[in-house]
Amino acid sequence: MRLSKLGMTPDLWWMTLSMGLWGLGFGLYGILWPLYVEHLGGSAVVVGLLSTTAGFATAFVVFPGGWLADRVDRRKILIWGAAVAVPVPFMFAWAPHWQWLLPGVLLYFGSAFSTPAMQAIIMTEATSEHLFTAYNVVMSVFGAGMVVGPTIGGYLATHYSYSLVFVISGSLYAVSTLVLCPIKSHPPIKSQKGQSKKFSWTPRRRPRLFQWMLFSAGLAMVQGLAWPFVVPYWKSVGHLSMQTIGFLGSAGILFGTLSGPVWGKIGQRWGIPRSLGYGMGLVTMGFMALIWAPSSVGWGLCAGILRGTGEGSRGLAGVAVGRTIRRQEAGMAYGLFNFVTELAGAVAPVPGGLLYAHWPYAPLVVAAFFTGIIAWWLVNGLPGRPRPAPPLPT
Image (tube, rainbow, N blue to C red; front, side, top):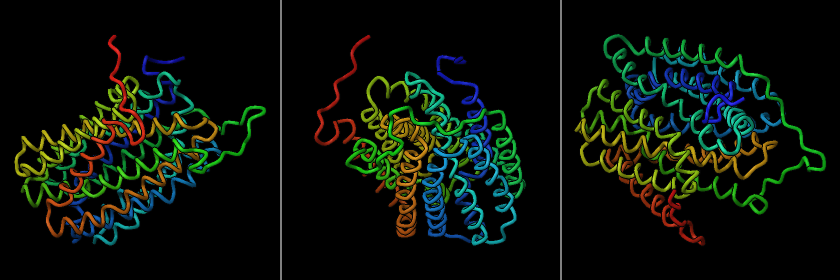
């Protein structure tokens, strides 16, 4: 029985609560992470190196994680993935130098092997008419937990210590893991009679799947050039305080979270490519606002609202992947999708760090330029396809 018009089942609600708590724990230090790296002696290039390490760690576990999700109880994978990452904030709290952060980064992002299992559960639990909304609700609620996290984290780091921030974060991770325990078993889905158990994973047999993977990989690469350096940019160019940066980060995350379900409805009405194009247009305007006035809190708030709202549309790419596959293969498909996008995103922070070291504005300028091109391309129709028709009046 469905609990609401969102098409959410009890299992999806438990996952939503867990993601919200996890987002709160991560939000305490996620926005301030580059400043903590600098606090431990790291430079902008080191921030890029750690981001790249995180991306590679994620990329190389999501594919085997997807393979497992089609062969092992997905509930077990989900719980183990969360449990593995619980000790990480405590490791960060006790790190004496930035090099000591590396094991924690590898462990935390290595726990992403459970991500395809989560996406596959959403695919099997949500009905087709509610897939857009249910997927975006569960995947974007992580941001809801992060809304208050940066402000609290900035206050605690300023008035107490970074160690306290990480200890509270680790405690929230533990509670988030426990919340997953009531979820029912989700064993692999068996193929129906007469249906082949072997699925082809070649671009020739799966053109739509691979098109969305390549597009998402390119988008991840463009965004990865800039996002790790927004906070250092605010700090070094805008000379904003940690509490102000935390507030601005919270504002962006809030609008990203609130816009997620809305983008689901928009995607259903206007189609995924066009909706994503409008979202990336908002992200482009957000980057331009950051470049225009780095020291202005008002412009920073405007930039956060625009970028956050636009980023909320990126979940539609995951929905698009789900619509190209059968439920029996959801784990493998999302594992492959996450592998390609994370690998692409992992490459970007290192050149982004070099650009930032040369000129702090450079990563934002490059990201704004290419995001704008992607937005124009999506809104005006993909190559070889006619421009989508406007929605019919209701």
